[in-house]
Image 1 (cartoon, rainbow, N blue to C red):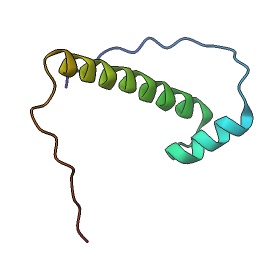
Image 2: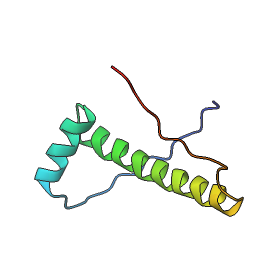
Image 3: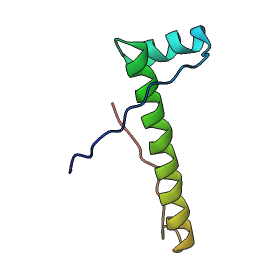
Image 4: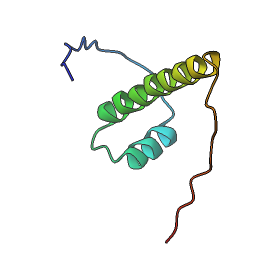
Length: 72
């Protein structure tokens, strides 16, 4: 995967501290800045997944979807 240059910009925001603390713990981040960055990455990824699913549906979807059965 090619690396792209990141354009970082300082922001001053009001954020719910309880949500930030919970997100930091859930994502295993060490800093609040890293937590916000990781959360934004997840939002962008979610949009990409939904876009791909929309494209799949527009192309006719899957011929068959079998549930995955996990043993163990």
